[in-house]
Amino acid sequence: MKTKIISFIALIMISMTAMSFMNKATNKSNMLIQSIDNTISSTELLESARIITARLKDFSSEKYKVTVIPEKYQIQVSGINDKNLSAIENLVTQKGSIHFYRAYSQSELFEHLNGNNQLFSNLNNKNVKSSDTRIGCVAAKEVGKVNELINSTGQNLSCRYVWSDNSDSTKVCLYALRLEHKKEALLSGGDLESVTFSQDKTSVYWHIDFSFKKTAVKTWSDITKQNINKSIAIVIDDKVICAPVLRSVIESGKCSITGNFTENDVKLITAFGNHGELPVVFKVVR
Image (tube, rainbow, N blue to C red; front, side, top):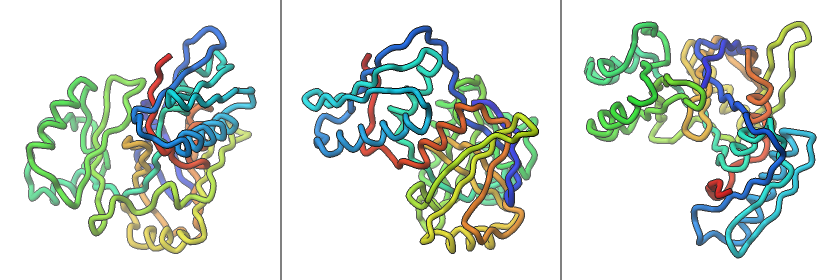
């Protein structure tokens, strides 16, 4: 996942990693996916097909055919363009779980851990400021080693560690997410009313606009009031997408991210945000 230079309207970005999906296929093709759980109901399978169809429609104007094969707990997607193969795989297999967390800065986490430097000593902090929400970075092959260290220290009920995505990078960065009153997140994808995107006419930058439901507007406003100059991390499927710092109170229930996303990035994030989570997890079998 490439590091992105991002700015928020009402939220100023200090760190950004965004999903990047590169495609190298050469022909239109079919993709067959199967639920990893063979006990799912026909209702769940049909709902998954509905969500996948809606995501595909959001992503591209091309015509895809989505076919349910109930006896095998499978769904087939036909008519996939060569350049979109990797992106389509993400659309049809990623659960699309979106959450918003308050993120610790490096200095805040050090204080929270009572000065225990063991975790930091296993991360590369050379280019990371103490105010940064990236706790540190490592080569992708070192993630397992750091996870073992985190697990060996026992469960921290007020902190959750999450990595950035490494789908197109050899380096990943660790974030420490704050659990509020033992809740998993401040807000979730279920609190979103809509997600849209557009491209700046005077630059190459893309915009992603989040709008929260009326029931979540006050919560979002309270979050911004209580966390001025603190980071709010946006997480999709347990991968940190960005961690902006709140610079002002936002009472409208809306926020806009602007930056050097790819077109696929904004389309994928929009498709996930508008159509909810898949009820089951799928894997590609052909």
